[in-house]
Length: 148
Image (tube, rainbow, N blue to C red; front, side, top):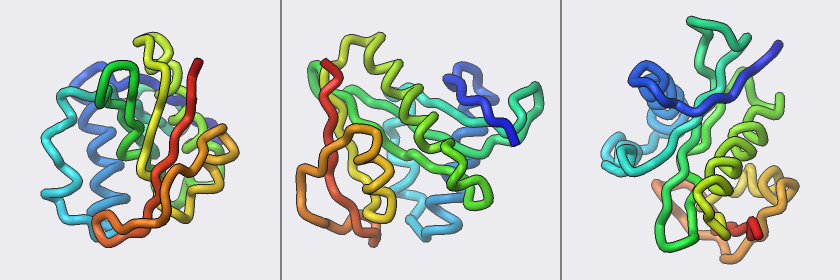
């Protein structure tokens, strides 16, 4: 199967990204909608992964980047639908978000990573910078990567 990751620049692409997030975080993981839909989408850059790439393709992954302080971006809401996990989509989403961060001159990226995927982020150059903590009832760690 082929996948394509792009920046969510249209309302339809933004809706596709939100559809993936709803399926993974709210429906699958039980995160309350009030936590998932946090009012920060408008200040974020979103990316979405599509199966088979073309027009009308199925959205299967999403993520967002938010500048949280000067020169520092935070990767958030990275999600891949369960049947599509293990195909490199998460890594591709991160790569696109890192490209956005680089274009915007950000020097550091941080994230709160769910502990089951900490290893994937480590393989992409992120370092764990905290002990385990709970967020929305799910174990997480804080991770960071320097882009400079």
